Image 1 (spheres, rainbow, N blue to C red):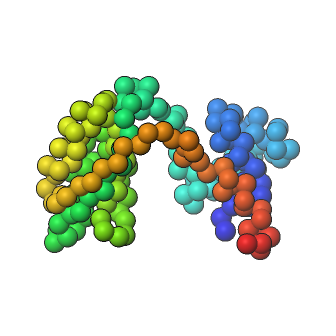
Image 2 (cartoon, rainbow, N blue to C red; image 1 turned 90 degrees about the vertical axis):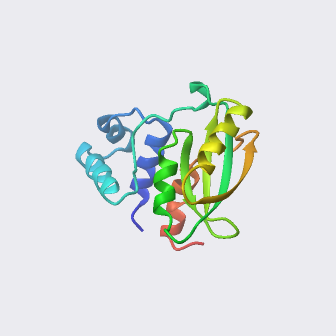
Amino acid sequence: MTVDELDAKLLSLLTSEPRLGVLECSRRLGVARGTVQARLDRMIARGVITGFGPDVSPAALGYGVTAFVTMEIRQVAGHDPVLHGLARIPEVLEVHTITGGSDLLCRVVARSNPDLQRVIDRIVAVQGVLRTSSIIALDNPVPYRVLPLVADVPRHRAGRP
């Protein structure tokens, strides 16, 4: 495991208060500043920490509709050509390759339901996309989170399931 209990405390602290500096983190955790910096550097290098940027609300930018779009693609050329095409659509926030009846799952945003149709039309126009199906999200009662996983690290380090 790449995260120990001190790392978990540091991650929890920075997740709840992302603007804290290294010195303040070291003060609150009761460890040396160099220890905090070394831990951060190590977690960045190992890919545990993937960014420090602000979380931006698409709704605050005028994109009040969130939808999930599954798609079947033409497999002969693989995923890459389709992924490159999807990456050129600003409203496509993320893409996952998936198992099951579809090949890809996208989270997309739009300004309205009619605008969602425009976004889906752009997706369908990507070379290699055969078919799409979409689901509009009504609410996000449990937003993306990792703190429960971070809090669970000590239990797993102790070998408990």
